[in-house]
Image: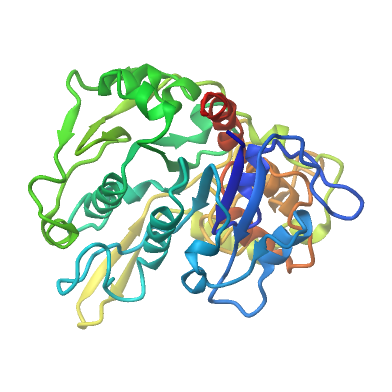
Length: 416
């Protein structure tokens, strides 16, 4: 089976960088791809900005007519090329289904749209394999109805004849340079040889040894003797009923096949992470990255412990409290999770002691790219510097995808 890929919500190309082990680009800015994955179509659209910086970067590195910059809801799903693997990193949103309609129609509010676009593509194109990434809170959202959104996703997959493995992975646990925790979802269609092979194993074996995630990212142990089973189908006649009533505790690893989902908390078999010191620029950086006295005072306050009295919308007073952080990020440790606010004056921005000047500064865009394992200057494509930080805060750790690619290639090579 040919290794063809569609990349949704492509950003600056994290899935593609990871799958094809991209390390550099040529003098024209084109990525040098050595991997076996052929990307036949991609889509990147940012509705909240006039200038499409992410798409412009993607289109520079992967120039071609198959890159689309369009609202995915306006794309005719049947026109998307056939593909073996559907990939995408999509937001955790409200997936609830309206009372008046069923079968994933009638989404409440403007959120939740992107999952239903994925669902429509699955219906139209039936790709054999799907690999998705999301924030780890997906398995516990929404707060007032824990597990509902993920339960809806699993129900959708099952109704379309897919089995699903999932794993919450902290990149630093497996030797990478960022303490970034994300959920990865691997779905495979009932028609595949892989499905027929994997269904021979017990759910315990799939999660602990035989599944894609177990083979790629080994586990130390399952933290419970019995895997919890969540029947998310027989109790509810359709998605509306499930949406209204579902509540479950999904753990950081699990497996769905047929009409049952099994979940258990696992402990990873860890590897020593890459420390920040290995990634920072040591030959000197521009002076504007260093903190002046005013900025030092601001960060001292932001990273310090505080208890501030505030007033809510109803006029009631309350205290907002935060614990203290270290004055700066230690270079002997991996990076914390990068957020889209990286580089701005806020509590979450990394502050380091420059190894050459021994002065406090923020990270450079290149250092942020290295933390996510993009090639140096990947986002230096004409976008403002603050957007380069935003892109890395919004990206995935490409090394996770690179490692998964090794076993994905083996799986697909066995398909007819």
